[in-house]
Length: 276
Image (cartoon, rainbow, N blue to C red; front, top):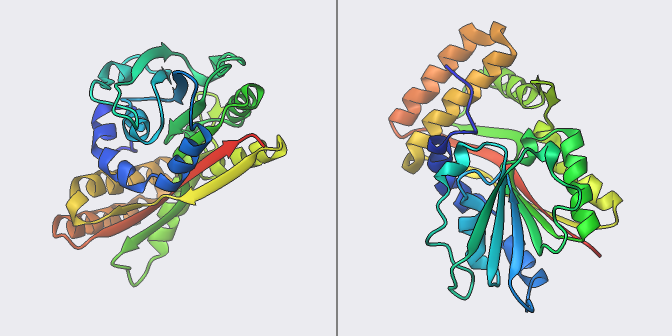
């Protein structure tokens, strides 16, 4: 059993349909209004771009012409980028460039002249220092930011079990795992949206958030199975002493998924910030 890897093309492809269903169209429309009537091509920066899922979903909802700067610290993952069919709201193809760069190395003036900054499933894996750095760069450039699908730590699994102490213990251990220190980096985990919202608010910016949960049922059995295995695996990395109860719990849930009986809600939140 292993924890969920967020850095493989296979995992990103598996989660993409659930991500697209969950993202806040309302916040995307609000961003589009902020960018209305551009005088020329607009530049958008996508942080932690991965395989380009945020660009594929968001570009058709925004005016253009658009040029995307896709920034990611993983040179291997961006090899899987494919934006060939992506168009803006008027049906014009977007253009793009790739920058391989870790957030800690992001230039403080990286967003000067940009119309917006975006990211997907990123905030919960950044550190406090990285969050401060990104917000400062947005504020310095007065560039609106839309960050989608940050984990908030709440999970609901159905059918409910009569004795759910194990499930609560797994959820708590998973959330601690999300806040862990790894390779000298302590991640924000479920605290990310609240912390980033506070940073923008302290800068005097407008902030809106929206609940964007995954709703997983039989049609997404493969994703559910991968998620259950990874959720329990991460919890056991954090608290190995849970193994005897957690492995039995995992096996029961996987059996329910195989028989079309499992439903899972995984809470996420989107955040939009823009200058007053």
